[in-house]
Length: 351
Image 1 (tube, helix red, strand yellow):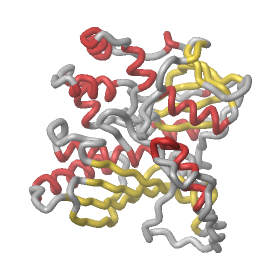
Image 2 (tube, helix red, strand yellow):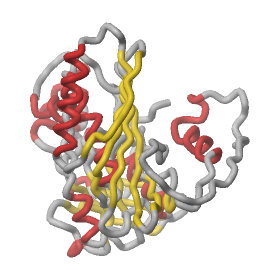
Image 3 (cartoon, one colour):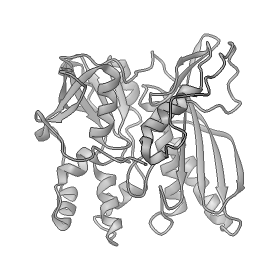
């Protein structure tokens, strides 16, 4: 999920939508996670809340991978099914004065399709829930749908259902379903001695957000990157074919999301600053705002680039470039840049 002042949120996990017919008993849920009754969302933070939520939902026998990765992995008969859900809320994750309806449609589809891509899979079906004000022009809804459909067409996916209801502001809820040709690539398989590589643009959408936040519309390439991300849809399956050991999409920030991979794998990761691609447009924005352009690459989200680990540089597919290495965790897993811990937030947090 994408923030106007930040980036997309990692997924809580699978969302049921009536499309999957999977057998298997469901164990009773434990309704009492150990969270103080007077705790607020801000007290726990986004991932503390997610941890408390997932403690309530026990997983049935048909669940191979539940909440915690880019998508859930379910068994239906003998096939694995990937499922993920995401939300976008007006004035929190997009602004109508910054983005046209078609842009919002592209973005809503892209952030969901990217979750399946990050597992090494390909999306094939989506459902869309749309809550809108009664006075919203029908043209906005139709343009949103056209943008959504155009993005889905890039991977051959179909919109197979959804819901429409009234609300005070626009809310988009999407569920995406896909499959992997090989086993899904999780966040938990990285090993010390491996390399870290990235595919796709990184920091562009954050640069566009910085420009729009200051009332400007250029560099146009960055503004367009914020409005319509360009996930590297072919890179996920290519990474799986090449033997990627772990992978995720960068939705909240490169450092922040790699920290999730490091914790899931029980390793540390060190990035090489000189290996990061910092295009001229980002340098121009940083110069105009008095900031460090590399920070946009390290902490920006919304581009939905893919980061994966591979056994060696020789195994890295053409779409990826090596930007770091996997190390043994000395204490708690962490992410460093040139061996130094990063100061400040590694990306967007929602609470």
